[in-house]
Length: 135
Image (cartoon, rainbow, N blue to C red; front, side, top):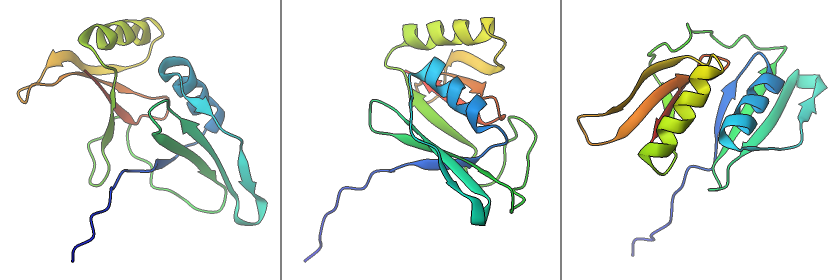
């Protein structure tokens, strides 16, 4: 008998240089809740969770003992290259993109309708990670 289980992504994690800046960005523009900071001095590790109303979470991490590979802002790279955030409507995408542009946040594509039917825009967060805003 095959057991059926429900799979969902619990969280994604990303190394950053400035945890506070990233947390402030996602709290301000995406209404993320910011969890309590965790620090392990012995391992040189600090993290903080961003929590969204849907249950999705992002773990924002920094390290003083490892050397994560840095990529150019917005780089298309092997592995995780972007994550998408559904805003619920084209109007919500347009509104947030307008607000982000006014704040000087890089909008690198869109808003536009894609060949596969999505309405989306791509922005860069403060650490240069690609975030797809979609309806």
